[in-house]
Image 1 (cartoon, rainbow, N blue to C red):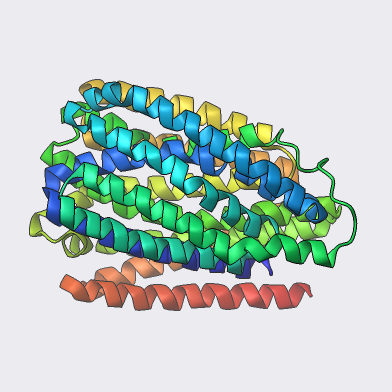
Image 2 (spheres, rainbow, N blue to C red):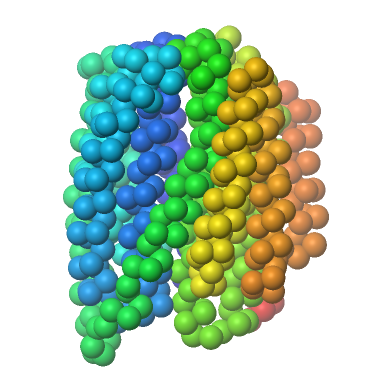
Length: 473
C-alpha cells in the first residue's frame, strides 16, 4: 500500500475517532457544564499525554523492528507485550502518587480521584497498542484502520453512557478505562492472524537482531514530548484561574477542536515511519525520497484545507459543536490554537521521518529541546499573562520547531516539499478561507457546507497525488 493510500486510510480512521470524540466532548459539556468541561479535559489530556509512554514506546519500536525484518514478527511480538504491560503498571502507580499534586496545581483538589482512575487506562489500553502496532509494522494500514475504528466506536458508546449515568469527571474516566479494555480485545481479534500469515509466507528463522528495544526509549520519549507540546499551553492556562474557570472552559473547547486536526493528520507519520524504515532496509534511496516528498506534500495540502476552513468558520462552528451561543467567544482562541496545532502536526511527521531514516535519537533531541523551551515559555507567560498570550507563545515555539525540523529532514533524507506543492497548498488554503467567508453560512449548515468544500479540496489533492505517482511510474 502506498504512503498516500495508507496514510488516507489511517486519516479516515482518525477522522472517525475525532468525530466520536466530539460526541463525547459535547455530552461532557451538557452533563458537566462549561466549568466542569475544563476540569474534564485537564484530567483527560493528562492521561493521554502520559499514555503515549505506554502506547508508543515498546509498541512503536516493535513496529519499526517488524518493518525492518518482517520474518522476526512472532519473536518481536512476544517481547513487546510484557514490556508494554510492565511499563503500564509502573506508570499507573506513579500517576496515583502524583494525583494530589496535579489536582492542587489546577486549583481543583477534588479532581485527585479522577486522576487516579485515569491511570487504570494505561493497563487496559496496553494490548490495543501492541496489536495496532503489529499491523502498522507489517504495513497493513487497512487492518490498523479497522482496529482504530472499532475502538473509537466502542469508546463513544461506553463513555457517553458513563457520563449520562455518573455525571462526573470520575465516571467519565471509568468509562474510558472500560472502553480501552474492549478496544484491546477487539484489536487482538482483528490482528491475531497477521503474525501467523507472515510466518507462513516466510520460512526463514526468526531472529531478534532487528527487534531489540534500543529504539523504544527514544520513540516513547518522542511521543511524550509531542503530547506535552500539544497540551502544555492548556496546563499553563489552567494555572491562571483554575481548571474550573469559565473562560478556561472556553479555551478548552477551542483546544478540543484544534487538537482534532493534530490527531487526525499526524496519522501520516504512522504510515511514513514503517515505509521509510522498510525502504532503508532495502537500501532504496529513490523510494525514500519519493515517500518523503509525497508524504510531506500531502500533509501540507491537507493542513492548508483544515486551516482555511477552520479559521473562516470557527465563530459560527463553536456554538454548533458545543451547544451555546456564548461558545462563539472561544473562536478568539482558535485563531491562535489552530495554527499551533498545524505546526506541531508538521513537527510530529518530521520526527517520524527522522526515526524511519534511522535517526530516532536526533528526533528525540529535537523534540526534547523544543519541549523544554515550550514548557518554560508558557509557564513563565502564564505567571502574569493571559490565555491569549500563552496561546501566542505556543504558536511561536511551534513555528520555530517546524523550521529546525525541516532543516534536519532535508539534511538527513535529501528531500523535502517541492516549492510547487507548497505554493499549491497556500493557494488551496486561501481559496477555502475566502470561499467560506463569502458564503458566510450560519448555524448547523456550516458543517455540511464546510464539509463539501473540504471534500472537494481533498479530492483534488488526492487526484493530484495519484497523477504524480503515475508520472513517476
